[in-house]
Length: 387
Ligand code: ATP
Ligand code: MG
Image 1 (cartoon, rainbow, N blue to C red):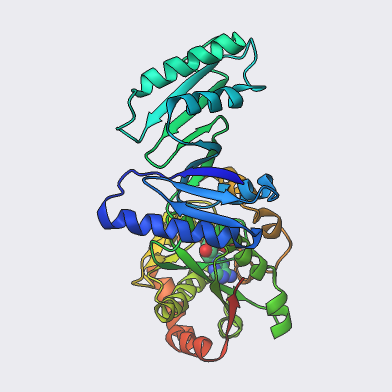
Image 2: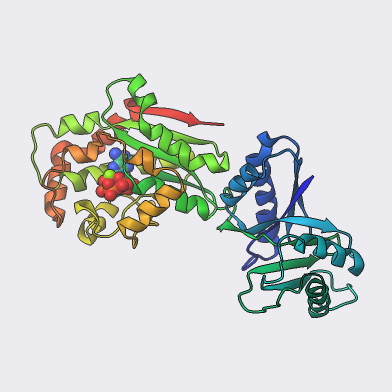
């Protein structure tokens, strides 16, 4: 059996919230590890324990745990009962081969069990002394090469050296649902990821100009939505909506505010689909000033089209920061594959400073309200994303 101790961020977790958080996290971990065979996840005092069969590859286990939101850090641990002699023996075994005569080290003890007869400092000091006696290694309390952690709880004591940082955030599912407006680009999948990190689940909406149901189902957008949900084994819905009615309404126009009008149209449709799915907010990949539709003036005009909250988690990010995260969450490769985004068709010379009057004029001319109804009634393909 291999054992991992899992710690979550406790800050701000009180009463009922805390129980919900812990239960959700346990369920999420179970879901993500379910195909790995014999895994159990248990909730103890203020931490979780994952036990897996010895033949479960630890790289796989760890790479999955690293991506689960709500985990502050985790560690492969040795578990022993709570007597000092047993703890000391386990510490020496753990130090063996890791702490050599020149390795700087320290012992860090936490005592979740206040009934334990020694203080944390006493435990650290005595076990540290044993290790020095055995290895002659130098103790260094600040920035040592190796930290041997001992966590003493009423149920058991855990010892570990390798502490693996978790993804932080809140367990997915705890914060409700959002609808992410997914384009073919780099930013929007990253935006969805950021909301998942804050405990939301997400559905997706994409406007396309694809000709056939087959082309729609084969579009890279499907893979992008899946890639965002995959580390969490989350189910979701992807609305593939044809921009064809909108495009044909504009066939005879060559306005410089088309991009703004299109983005407003997208939001109107999005709000309606969000209501259907009980998604309480819309998410976009906007970042101030990145492209013409994202000047503050245009964001201002675009936002007026809906009463639904629009969340823009990347609003202050530089492109390079967004790209780095896109690579880390495995959406980048799909994002840079060539794709005809309807947005790029009509925005040859988009206005960076659209005027309200121009926008209203064009919207009246093409009768946007009717276009929204037409689009919703005949141009929405609903794709379930399941595991
Ligand atoms: P991205 O990298 O996400 O494509 P971008 O820098 O290309 O963003 P825009 O094309 O102005 O910027 O789009 C801004 C946001 O509007 C996107 O992040 C996305 O949330 C939404 N959006 C754009 N095009 C579409 C589309 N075809 N379908 C759905 N949402 C879209
Ligand atoms: Mg784009």
